Length: 283
Ligand code: DHB
Ligand code: FE
Image (cartoon, helix red, strand yellow):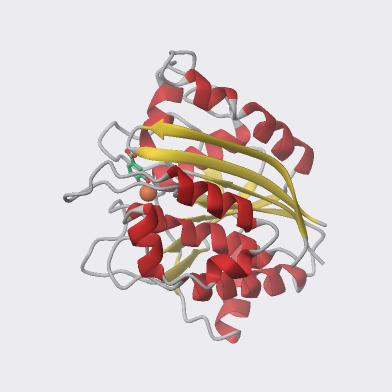
């Protein structure tokens, strides 16, 4: 069977990608953030995943407010970085694994997660920035990604969003599907988004490090405390976009009850976002 070898979780701020691509990682504003990414890259290199499942949300590149799936899984042979206003990122296309994707889709639907499925999909910063943090690959740096990918998107844009508990259960269903795959692939899950931030309205710029630190502290030993919080609490305490943390809970749901935190990094702020990162393995 395929094996879940580890999880990385990280914020997915678009300007982190722009900073990488324009050579600003040693700039005094960005250096403290990027300094924290080195050990995460080492962790991912050692995991050597054949397949990386990227749990992210689309921010209006492919999914508009008129049609918003709650959960979607892609099964394309290839995914490219779309143009979000800075031009498409100059990074290699991401190779998919349609056989593995269709296996996931079949198993998730059989487990009563009624999905949207994509046979074509461009990916935005929610996907590409975490991939660059995990594998390197700023503009022009690598010729090919060292892993195949499966994009899984979660609605974090248009109310109502799925509840934290539902996202955790979605992760549990993903894990059962991985375990049932007949291959011997090493699978990593990349959970993206968060930490605290709000991009619009009266509270634009809102960040709350105390909530973020509580989330990071509970994530490995006590996820129950996090899935018991209603979505409204995330929006109030972490900001509207801070509720993207529900995608970290998808990744957590896929892991064993007992896990080890291998590495953690937290920095305030990157653009309008408190930026968090974690690396985890099953105990
Ligand atoms: C920012 C953060 C996000 O998560 C996002 O999707 C867009 C912008 C920001 O802080 O600029
Ligand atoms: Fe986002």
